[in-house]
Length: 75
Image (cartoon, rainbow, N blue to C red):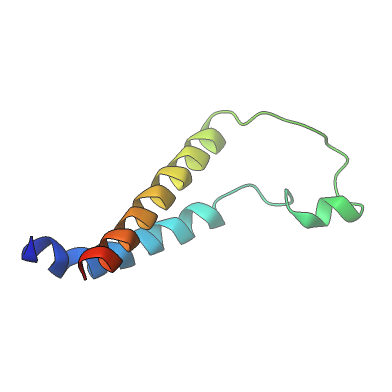
């Protein structure tokens, strides 16, 4: 168990970087700016690479939260 505790901070750094990349790769213009006169597109489904990036971001976020909980619990 000591080996796992030793590498949790490195895992957190790696997961944080992957999470940042995943968030930055999300579609532009889907934020608050569209509320104030941006694109008039309503609801659209995610397809192809956009869906894969979205799911990747969710998985990385869950792994990051799990690593943080483990760090608090055992660190």
